[in-house]
Figure (cartoon, rainbow, N blue to C red):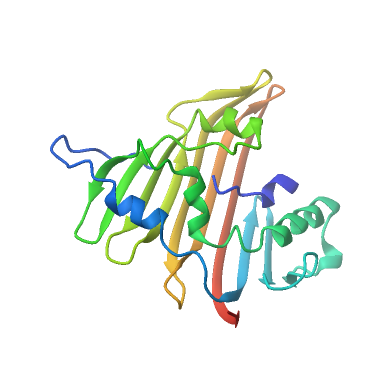
Length: 225
């Protein structure tokens, strides 16, 4: 159950046009967009398999005091769910802002696959966390897609998917992997993760599994500069 809370800022395939200019200007501008600004508290709605919870998150508070459970009550949580809350508490700010997806996006090598007057969409090979060797084993099997705004540079959506099944370990196989995040503008103009959904299916130790997780962030309230 603990992993259910760890939606790591980890797609639907888009089709490139041979005549489309391979400009990364909008992408670089989005990656370089401002990351500083006011601090907001926000409501978190999370669903993991048969668990549904709601909490108010206060990123400005000390670690250990950032998650105020609304439902269910903290006393009703299992030990694994409480461990999950600790991870939410620790990453209260990082999991909220869309600019944190930038660490997965290479500044060179991304390919423009679609654009409109106001947005540009790129496909890329996601960057692994250099501090986590297991993360590299996962990222090499995934394809990333990001949509950015042209007029007010920012990440508008982010996704990772596995084009085909793969084996992350000798005794496990992942048949499908899909992570999709949609962003929205905060009052100060930065983009935050409005929704993020993860679905993974496969098998481990001869047992099939299907993991579904989703988060919704809403009701932002400015609490500090």
